[in-house]
Image 1 (cartoon, rainbow, N blue to C red):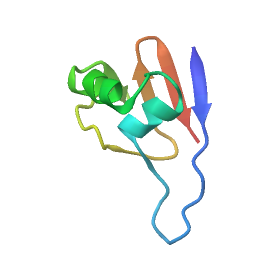
Image 2: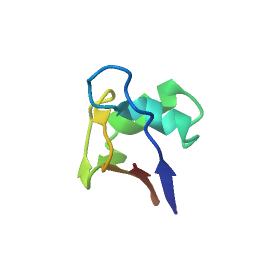
Image 3: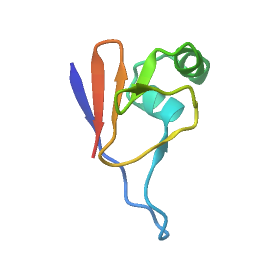
Length: 75
């Protein structure tokens, strides 16, 4: 399954991003933040095809996050 997440533009000049654990919660792939953190630290989440253990990794437009067989494309 492929899902799409649209980043809202940043109000300042910083590039828009969402933290990896928050993305999993917003997309309702986990029940809560603790579960998101566990999935990430257990190596079950990939960012752009590579396992990423950083709970607060900055996910930006153009990135892909994979958990199980679900792919989230960030636009």
